[in-house]
Image (cartoon, rainbow, N blue to C red; front, side):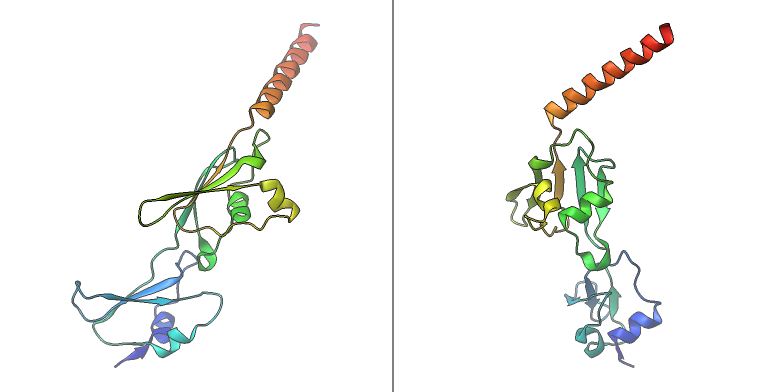
Length: 175
């Protein structure tokens, strides 16, 4: 018998924290049938899940949340899943990556986004402005790249400091 989408999700044990923000329903057994996409939120109930009926032969899919990439002068560069309803901003993404390294150019932060038509957008941001609250953190989309460049001055200073520290250690050992 037809069952509400909410009941189907409950019977399946619910979604995981890695679930995306949409549910796809394919009507009938035909794999070529168009899919119906329903917005979904783990944190709040949506009227769509209660009102949509799933009939025998329908397939229900909950795709994974999207991935954003945090690269450059961060502690753990890599891809991060957009958990919790697929909403993630730049500050949260940087936190997931363990924050910036000492040599980071936090004023030169960039978000690179590829549009479906192939065009590329480049959003220059200031992490300092975000941290001070003078700039709102950009909300990320799946496949966005957050890039934190290295500061040549900071890198040179830290390597100079490292050499001085090593020389001081060597002088202590030599005596």
